[in-house]
Structure formats: C-alpha cells, structure tokens
Length: 153
Image (cartoon, rainbow, N blue to C red; front, side, top):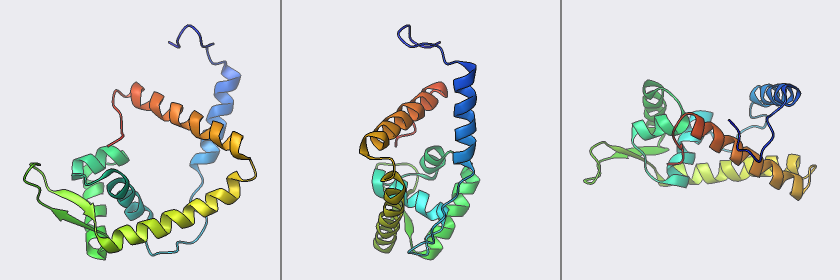
C-alpha cells in the first residue's frame, strides 16, 4: 500500500510504465566493445571493481543469476585473465577480484559506454536525466524492498 501522501497509481499509468519497461528491456548494447569484454565479464567486473571482492554467492545475489551461471561466467573470466579467485583468512569462501588487466579493460569499457550514453541523454538535458536517474534509483529501491533485500554489495 502506498504511503498516505502518495496517490495510488492509475491503470493508465501502470500500462504506460509496463510498455516503457518492455521497450527498455528489449534493448541490447548497440555499440561495439572497445575491449573484448563480453557482457557477463563486464557485469562481474562492475561488481568487483566498483564494490570490492565478492564470493560466488555474492555475485549471484548481486547480479540476480543462478550460482551455476555465475560459476561458469567467473571461470570464463578467470580463463581470460579478467578476474582471479583467492583465499581471504577473514572469509570462509574464496573471493573474486579484478586483475590489473581486468580493471583496466573494465574502466576502458565503462568509459566508452558512458560516452555512448552521454550522446543519448544530452538530447534530454541535465534536469530530465537527473530526474530519470533519481526515479530509477527509487524504482530499484522499491523492487529491492519488495523482495526483502538490498542488492548493493
């Protein structure tokens, strides 16, 4: 139930939101990669570079993927030299962290993706982009709250 100071969402608004989420969800990265990082390696590196080392379980929760899928993706990233697994005496499970080449590739790819996004959002302007980012943050928080957990590592 929404807080008392918020009006209940109308069916028309809900339909419009569902439509736009479907349009957004069908999109894929359209530009070519400046590195040879694939999408799964990029997402793993995003978590471990931006939020620190993770266990396989932590990666699975953070990316909302089955642990068997994460295990395969981490193995592939290890084979490519993007990440490494290591023992930490303070953690019962092995951790995954970026290698130096993995962090470099991630940062190059992230910068290139940011520039591609900048070309799009510059057509909206700073205020609309800021409002969009804030709205998406609140939407993601509401999803996390609805499933009873925060996904921020």
